Image 1 (cartoon, one colour):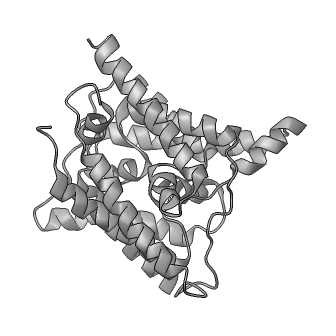
Image 2 (image 1 turned 90 degrees about the vertical axis):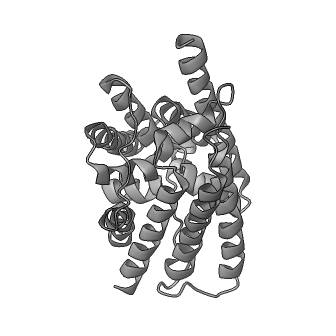
Length: 139
Length: 154
């Protein structure tokens, strides 16, 4: 548990929750990232979605201005793995109607059994992938 | 216009939340998913905190007749636990476990101009477009039954 960061996790999580609740209060929309990006690429009403994405990108930029830039993410995977993973995340999240934000936060917060089911499935699948990658292949 | 600004503000808040929680870092995500290794429970704390605030917020929002800047609330209406949900969630989990990025953190990480993030986001967008095209193709009757339920906007 050397990497456990409960305080920043709780503060950040509360902000994510606040953003999700506020978006519903102010605009009547669900803060699901896969839907927001997917509908921007394929659907109609783009304006509020593009604004949300702009805000999402503005956060690390503003933070960088006050001396706390977003750290470069560690992605040691090969290009092929990156591409395959990206395709799977995009295709799967849209087919399943949501990702960690839409199902995992907003859906479970609505006590939706559908979202809880999706969240349990993608958690178990992802845990299995990491197990195989780190303890079977990478052992 | 007010709705756009409100959405921008919510995106900004969401972005700070992801940053502060550490969920923009694939190492934190993979550390949580690696329950048989040096397990990092941070993601569970992030989700728990987000769920408490969202749950309370949604309960209060439901008491209002309409959103502040829109004519009506678009709450998700689907409840079916069908094949697209199960297969889609499994495929998403597969990709998420491979790299440790889901759509929100992937998009936010574009601000770091990391080539691997850019390639991931392009592939993710392509996957979304392919899913849309695949769903809209002339389907068999059985596919209609299953795929018309998959057009969620979450």
